[in-house]
Length: 183
Image (cartoon, one colour):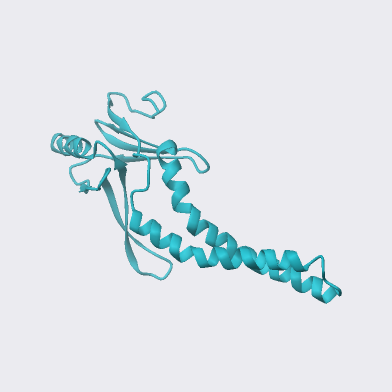
């Protein structure tokens, strides 16, 4: 990502650009998801193989249908288990490759490439909520926060920012300085 690929306004200059530090940053969350998804994966794969193994030996059409049903029944369980077990590991590998961050003298840019590309722009204003969340290997600068209702009607906070970057303190101070100049 370069300043030529960003939709910078006239007079806007690029101050910083970077990407997330590669690796698994929320280990406890990833371990929980892997442990929770492992039974789904094991049971789903076992059902698929059980049904596939009994299909050739089925003596009647009913037995063949039951074998196909058993294999098909295991597909969603195996798929969900695979998603929970391997999802955090895949995200840890691809986030640093597919996400780019940029900070200009007017806004913060988050560019996502890959399967679902997007460009999000967050203006830097004095009222911009700013938070520095320290981490072990990398820290996060949150610069957008919004209350949203979920499907149950409960309120939840949605945050956006530069996640897991190595220069988080430097970027945080740059945004604070921009907030002081913006009026």
